[in-house]
Image 1 (spheres, rainbow, N blue to C red):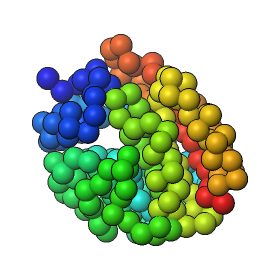
Image 2: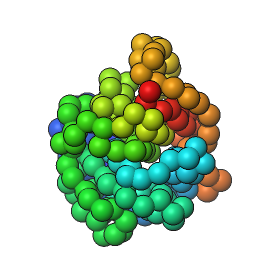
Image 3: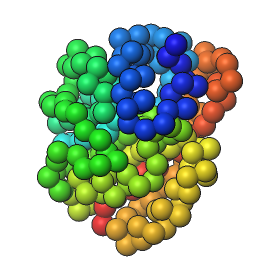
Image 4: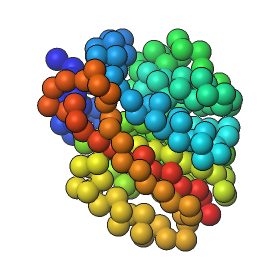
Length: 205
């Protein structure tokens, strides 16, 4: 059965691909809608309010929820990448991306350095998924002055020492802002209904 606990307990890219291959077609209804999932909208809103513009890369695009939220806010030039081909197939149906491609942000994405003016990520930096080591790849794909907005599960932030990772990046990052937000709206229930995430925005120096 595909659910949030299964996602949080993933161990490595192979398990990740297997879970999301099975979950892709029902993800928007079984998870996002039922749990009143807010992160894609929160990330998109922060990107726009902080002055973000395209071209923008949606990292861990999944079924395209963050890309759709960006388009609804008037952002153009949106590309997306994910480790799950099946999730990308669902994202393609939303018709909000200029380009969608397979990629692993923990390795090296098939993207030239400095290709994008912006980068977003919703729900990818969390338990069983991506840790702070991926921040170097986020910065690599950004042009100088480019804006990144990512969500990080609050417990994952502390357990995986994200603050220390940002401290180590030092002069590579500027305008760092961190705001804690509920991941789910009033319609959520279950053990994770009150979980929070940090919406982190920064620019590549």
